Amino acid sequence: MNNPAVSHMPGTPNLLLGAYTVADVGYTAQEFFVSGTATSYGPDRDGASADYATRIVVMTPTDPARFNGTVLVEWLNVSGGIDAPAVWFMAHREIVRAGYGYVAVSAQRVGIEGGVSLAGMDMSLKTQDAARYGTLDHPGDAYAYDIYSQVGQLIRDRPGEVLGSLRPEDVVAVGESQSALFLTTYVNAVDPLVKVYDGFLVVSRFGEAAPLDGASMFDESATGEPEAVPFVEELRVPVMTVITETDLVDGVRVGYHRARQPDADRLRTWEVAGTAHADNYTIKVGFIDSGSAQLADLVAAYEPTTALMGQELSHCINFAPQHHYVLQAALAQLNCWTRTGERPPTATRIDMTDAQLVRDANGIATGGVRTPWVDVPIARTSGAGSTEPLMAMLFGSGEVFDADTLGRLYPGGAAEYLDRFTQSLDAAIDAGFLLAADRQEILDLAAATFPV
Image (tube, rainbow, N blue to C red; front, side, top):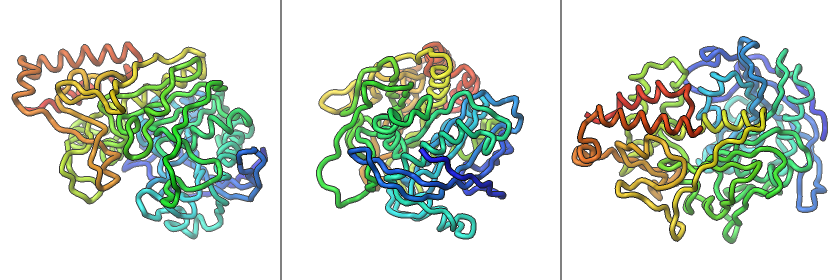
């Protein structure tokens, strides 16, 4: 593994974090260009080499005393044609609250140079700001794995060059959706060789895994159904994966149900009932959720909507808050696991029959990680969405129960609902699937969103 060169880039990094500033949440952001020579990984693990120059964005607590000792390294998601910090976006409240260091890595070519993406847009760094990023050079995704390894090793061996006075005790890899498919391949084929990361948070992976040869995952010329790929049995370090209903079933891609495997000493899988690959938090709530946003603003952002990125759907997208909160708990559990060896709780799998989800009388999936939004529901939320446009499949669906259903479920009205919701919430916290730190906010949201 080569030692890359590092240069600091003054100014504001191009990274879409939200409507708040990093300073608003008590963090400092710095951008660095990282360059060197990367090696590709082929079937014989005897790949070619190529020069590269990429960027990383490093975010650390403004008060160094708040640093908890763990640095999260996110493989930025490029499915939308832009470097997207998906895990930061969904779990930043816990990242900030617990004092993690966070490093965003432009690991793939599309994020820097542009190219084929799910959204069909080019929002690459060079397109958005050629003056700042024109010297970057990505040789292709066959080299992405080694680039990602070199960044992790840099953080571990030369932290002073990017983290200032902070010295990490653990360096943890994180990635969501397409990035999760690359991390799956990394865990299976690369990690046993390089041994860089202390743990992996693999969020919303489908059944397949990314290719080692750098071929695009959206190449329409590819023939045959992609193969489902489980994690290898002999995992070196803890791997935590969080799966939504959308990820589980066939549709968007090969469903994760085809790659299911039992939990093991170094593997935990949480399949979360009632969740979609993306939801209201992804496109609305997360942008304003700085930790000091007003409750009324959060409630308004969670309001059920049929609008999705300029298009009007025939149904609401998934609007349950649970995906965001469960992911924060998963992050906390993984950090405890890597630091102390204490394993996270196991969860039952979502029930399936003939590759389809089993649903209860209210249309809610049975089994899986249970939260008050599915066990004490006021709406049916699901990972199943419209088949057109493709983006709508990722956002699932939701429907608030009508007055008759609410009356049948909660004859005592809002008071009964909140009492039962609180009991379910406390059970989920005790089980480890939600965090006590989120309890009051969740209760406030529940009280404010019960239909009048």
